[in-house]
Length: 277
Image (cartoon, one colour):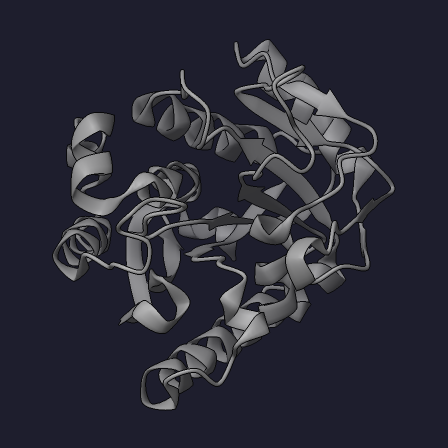
């Protein structure tokens, strides 16, 4: 029986690694929070990490743009687009193939990729969380950019199904789930650089209370207006939160205009303590 041994979520903007020392009084505590999260990942002794992120027209284009895609390659290359992290990340194809088969049986028709290069939404978190990279990754792409988007509820349902699929893995496979994206930011829009700390705080507060259900009723148009197109990436947080089933422990939050985004870093309690042991 597989074990969901860890779950977390973090923002992923490229400036985190390209301009790490910006506004050090703000960025310093964020870097410390990533170090803390990385230590927790190492302590979880993971055999694989399902890394839930999006893509910014590097891997997927309009000739083929799935709602969800699971990577099942032996290794994944980073795009290193615009100076973002590159290199090669070890995949976990056997885990990915088993999860794909199980999720398909549960009614989630995920696309699959036997190559799936990774853009900064995957590679920046892996740069900040080297223990996750060392465990090996099963990348899970979620469309957060190109309408029609999967609904917030569908993403939460995918997280719950992913939890069950992990538990159905053979042996004592220990898996982590990490969502990456958000929080409030406007990408390529006149409000580029703005941050809505009130929106971010409301989101994180609901997750801390284990009340993701309220978030599922939010309207994408309202999210766009209030927190920007980048905030649509909260879908990845919902996958991780629903997989875990328990409340968030927010390690850090800072509005970070120098990085053009509200930065959140959180872990989630695993609802079934026996599975996470």
